[in-house]
Image 1 (spheres, rainbow, N blue to C red):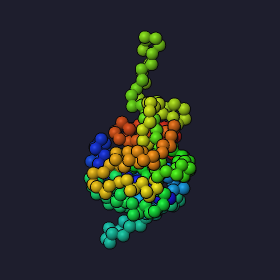
Image 2 (spheres, helix red, strand yellow):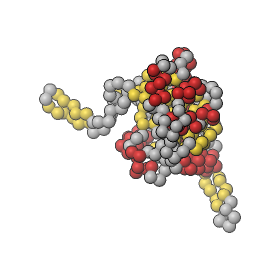
Image 3 (cartoon, helix red, strand yellow):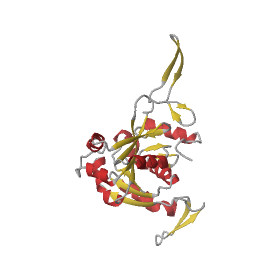
Image 4 (cartoon, rainbow, N blue to C red):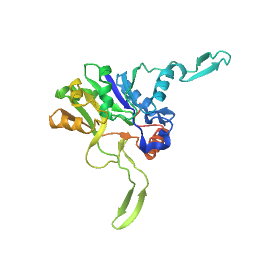
Length: 267
């Protein structure tokens, strides 16, 4: 099953990082968040990727092309002829990825990007996600749920993470401040009420018929709304860890989880 990844947005709320690289290449623990996302899929046996490129897409191309050659290698460069010799310092990388890197326009919206990679996704069930969020969604169970209901689309839904610190009270006395979002249990986040899209989809090719091939088409608006109106969009509830990386605050939170040594989105 192929996995489409939307990796072309401007990342305008993360300009400290995205002025020089696309958001999927912003690093967590020394690795681009795109790597973390692809590793998540690989752990569940999904290794065929179609990446929709846009803003600064050449950075992603270069990373993927150079990944096997230069990852964890020492290099010897012959400055006379430009020859590069890579000497691996570890066992060869285990990522058995096959990746299509598709230019979809610098300013295209998400729906347009999906439409423009449709030919590479094929005519079978496929998965779709964004290049800026991590989770511990059980992707195998997500696919199993999708196949069970027979509809065109499944959207993973999550409770929104709490973005605010808490004030703990005993009667009218303030006894403690919590400065940043806390975690409940091994992987759970302190979350708000209601559900939002978690950005992990399973789709049938017929879902693409709901997308107009227009530069300004947003997947999150008319296509999903129309699928829901026609009864073709089902929700897979994910109760555990999920975190997008929209802002520097989000990035710092993910970095802190990585540095703690047991980031909940990894195995």
